[in-house]
Length: 255
Image 1 (cartoon, rainbow, N blue to C red):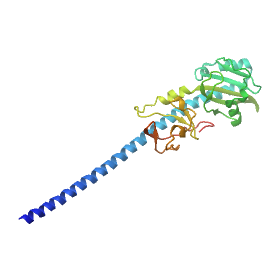
Image 2 (spheres, helix red, strand yellow; image 1 turned 90 degrees about the vertical axis):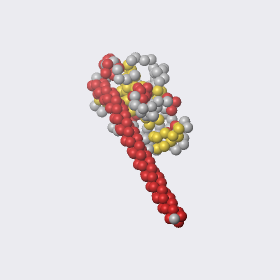
Image 3 (cartoon, rainbow, N blue to C red; image 1 turned 30 degrees about the vertical axis):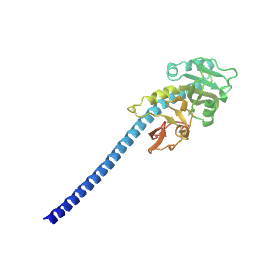
Image 4 (tube, one colour; image 1 turned 120 degrees about the vertical axis):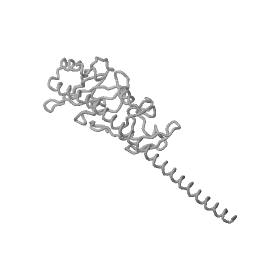
């Protein structure tokens, strides 16, 4: 009888171990499935948000590029100073840009709203003028300090020509704060934020203004993320962040 009891105990113990092992394996497998499901959901969520944001920025910038190109075409028809000034005062331009302006091939500069420029100001040496002339098409500059206001801005610029002769370059200034506000309007449920970088890793727009024009290596010195649609886990301010990138397509001269 004692032997039977001891044998039955062994059977019960073995069965218990099998149940525990099966339950543990099931728990691990279930955890694995849940982790993958959460990761897939997060991946889909971030890419959806990235696509929506990229599309919004593209639409916003493309609309302003079209306004500058239209102004350049109209100026090419009649480049008289009085006509140029009147054109730059149109509400479509004044409501869309901090300032719109024309730098002609002789160095004359016309800007609206009318602003006193520094003595000796020559538009032909400014990055927006050189960029538009070099590309022979519309360009977007990287952020730079505006000579008139001292603010950090980006410019849309496009050359104006008539009969193959250069008249000059038409430009419009966009406040970085406007882009910051547009990007900041994204709702990540308090879990994150969006920022804008160039293809070479330079930060162009960021909620933290101190990081503008820094590199990704400056922002994330440890495990600097690569610009791709894949997940990157990085350390920032003592916390682990997940970073992913979405390209903004269809913009001239910039990536």
